[in-house]
Amino acid sequence: MQKNQLVELEITDLSYEAMGVAHLDGMTIFVNNALPGEVVEAKILKVKKSFAFAKIEKIIKQSPDRVTIKLNQWVQTGLASLAHIKYEKQLEFKRQQVINLLEKAHLNKKVNETVASPEEVGYRNKAQVPVRNVKGKLEIGFFRKHSHDLVPMENFFTTDPEIDRVLVETRDILRKNHVPAYDEVKNKGEVRYLEVRRSKANGDMMVILVCLHKDFPQLVKVADEISQISGVVSVILNHNPKKTNVILGKHDYLLAGNPQIEDKIGDIRFKISAQSFFQINSLQTPRLYNLAIEKAGLSKKDTVIDAYSGIGTIGLSVAKHVKQVYGVEIVKPAVQDAKENALLNGIENAEYVCGKAEELMPAWVNEGMKANVIFVDPPRKGLTPEFIEASVKTNPQKIVYISCNPATMVRDLTMYQDLGYDFEEITPVDMFPQTPHVECVTVLEKK
Image (cartoon, rainbow, N blue to C red; front, top):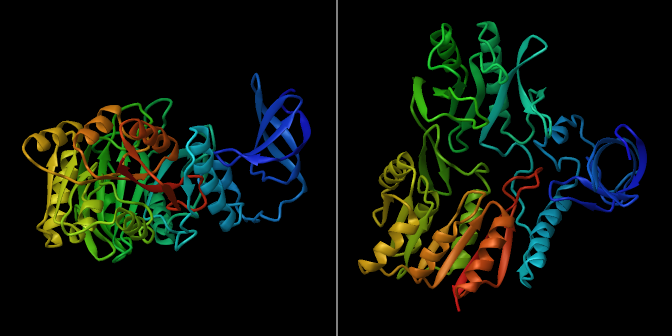
């Protein structure tokens, strides 16, 4: 098999990245934008020892599950890898991901149907898009899969259309003022990324310019013009001077308007700063949290530890159902935001402290605290072995695990089983329609 070779393939499966899977001459071939049941003519793009990557040249037999989309750059960039698949089939695909991971770990557990999102497109309340020079012009867009080639875009499909509008207007302001786009090879230029956050509760928007330098000649004029865009109430410069793939730098500078915007999860209000973690899908988030609360079977006698508490989104949602919430978070500004959000909502039974949960939880137990429920919502890398051991030593009756990565979740659940905790079922929740990502909720109970 050689690069650029044309082959006819029958697609039999989807990979976890939603690429079509075919087999030919002992090779596994991953075909972008192909669906099970399809027969395609494909061009080989890259050949490895036992597998290859290919792209469709022609669909010979089309799947009934295919959705024809006008702009397939969403699929090409991975921004919406499942956009060519009917939504009900996306939900099945996500559930099957979880089933496959459990089977691989030899765990025979029930996986419920995936909870559908209220919005299938335009649901994202935040966009982070790269800014680059393409053919001599400052462009915004998204990188093509497995590359740093920018595909210019004005419609990002999964983001709120109002965010798309502000991104385009901001791009045009940067162009008009001749602000240079970032060049990652030379580590030169000014604007690396644009980030726009929008409150679903009131429509207010925050624009963040991620820049190589803290200042540049056009900055005051640019900030003033961006602040005049309809709906924008906050303009911030994030300083990221490093040659890195990490999007945001450590320091933010307010250029115009307010330092925060306000949004809601259910009936609880949250102040959101430039670097606050806030769930992307505002309408689905209350469903996720309510599901976790329901599965936990909370009562007014319960004391809850909210580990990885962030700005308090889970803990403050839980507070009205329990006696006391103790939140622990390693990021100091997030702890401050959580305290402010508790005050904002008049919640008096939630306390937040800064530190490592695996160190603080055992200390609390030694001081006599009896927490019978722990909520965890870790980043994609999952929980550390140290955290898992510390959580077990805390001796809760239940551990509620909310996961954004089912692979690391299944790994962690296996470790919990070895330490005396077990679970009956997992419920997938679709927080990210049109993408392969799936959130999950499960409850571990002490055996």
